[in-house]
Length: 170
Image (tube, rainbow, N blue to C red; front, side, top):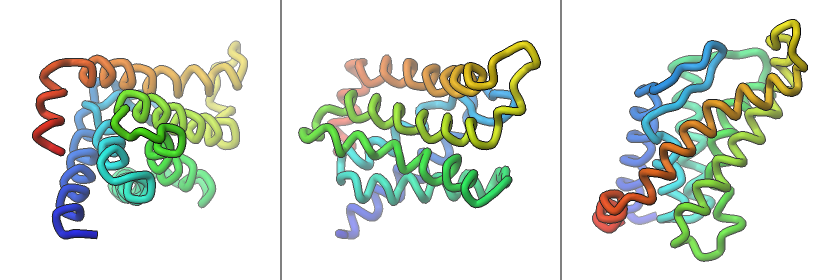
């Protein structure tokens, strides 16, 4: 990779991590609506492709784990911290024209949701309230924070101001 690419990716990874600390809503058992931290990782895929986006996602996932670890097993860490963030780059497998940032973002968030729900199904069903179906609990718990941040970010992506900023970044 060129030095310029490495620097831009490092900036977006750093920005993603810092924005993940700005929590609009903190869920009681982990997960939160942040200030568009997922968008920064999708931008890496948008600019440099799936491979670089996946590496950036893995780095942010590891940063999140090392600074605020929750460890049950290696599989849980892989699902919650590595694959969930790497999954944000997977939109690039389906969207051949990478100029479609909105589609990349939505598909990436869907993959993050899949990995988070998978972790919930394997490791967190016992956290469901007594009168609630555990599967519905896991599906809705993860949906709340990922859909919440997703909607906020989609509104920003659609704004004229963001489109102007994007022209400067790229």
